[in-house]
Image (cartoon, rainbow, N blue to C red; front, side):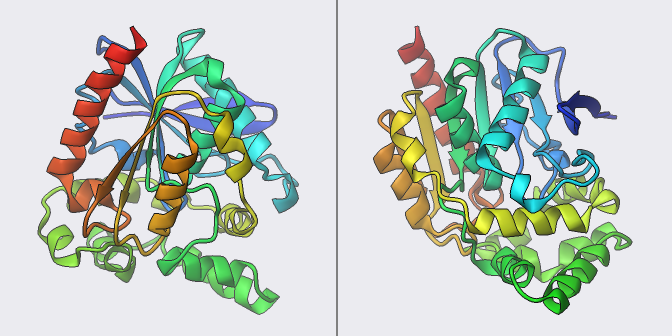
Length: 296
């Protein structure tokens, strides 16, 4: 049974989930997406075969928590990067890490690579973005969060109603099919249930207010100007039919970061690890092997 550990940093409560702390090799830090959690990495086998992996929470995402009185205006790129950089130092000490970010975790990984390059030796950005206007189901949440009090209350209730649902109900939610480019493939994938179970483990702790603040803050995010400062080796992976993060975001990142490698998975949507598991794993293993040579 994996148990998360709590880190207190500048009044924020963060959480880190050691996945294979006994493993040898380099340290790999895994950042989850906006509607996900550290539990989303529990079913991962790709990265655990490559090093010692720790799933690190985004600030405010359960079991992490914002300080009392925290406001949406305080949720900036600089704050997110600072908190995560300090957390990475607590986990890995002075050792630079391989940083993996999915979706909003990909955005956070970009910010860390630009602002704290000494903490990182390379980055894998999966379905990440530099500009935070979303589409698909979380785009609908983002529009509600930016609307009237009635709309924000409606979103709060939607998020609150997620808490008591069973795993089987959770897997049947439309958000899964609405986030992918290849719905039949994900339905048939035996990895879907363990992946969903990892998220479901934390769903009772969802804090609707924190997620609403993320929706509001990300809508105004644009870190394009930071991308040219990134000199680290980077793999940028995305699905060509991603309904949540426009594929143009992946191309923008890959074309702007100097040392980036582009991997576009044709026909896949937002959940590339479930829609194209073999291709996803093969690309990552190949790029990690090649980048190791470059770093020597």
